[in-house]
Amino acid sequence: MKFLADVNVSRRVVEQLQVAGFEAIRVTDIMDGRSPDQEILSEARSRRAVLISHDQDFSAILAISGASAPSLINLRTSSVETEQLVRAIVTVVRATEEELRAGAVVTVYDAGVRVHRLPLT
Image 1 (cartoon, rainbow, N blue to C red):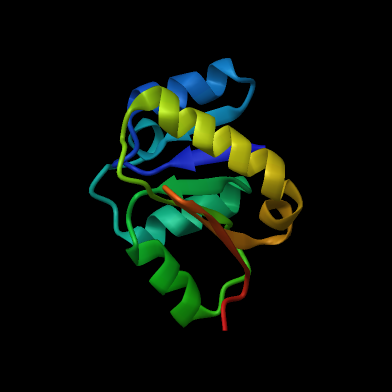
Image 2: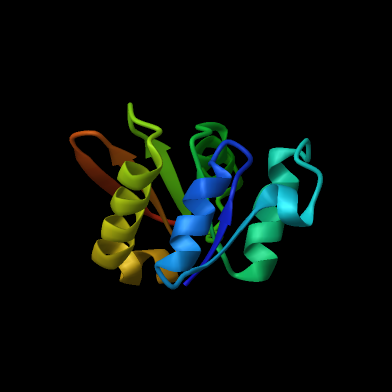
C-alpha cells in the first residue's frame, strides 16, 4: 500500500513506515508544502496513495465533493510521538486494508478507530 503523508506528519513517521515495508513519501518530497488541500488530494488520487494527515479539512473536502478516492487516514491522537503514531498507523492499515483499498476515511483516535466508506454521505 502506498502512502502520501501531509506536511503535518513528521518525516520520521514516513521513514519508519518505509522501514516497515510501506511505500511512503511526504507531500514536501514531491510538491510545494503550501499546496492547497485540493491539490494534495488530487496528487494522492493520481498516485493511488492513501493520504495520512492530522488535518481535519481533508475529511470535509471528501464529504462535500462526494469523492470516492483517495482514502484518508485521519490522525486525531493526542500523541505525536513517532513510534506510537507508526504503531497506530500500521495497526489500522492491517485492520482496515480492504476498506482503504476500496475508498474510506479511517479516523484514528486515542480510544479507537472509526471507518467511513467513500463517498461520504
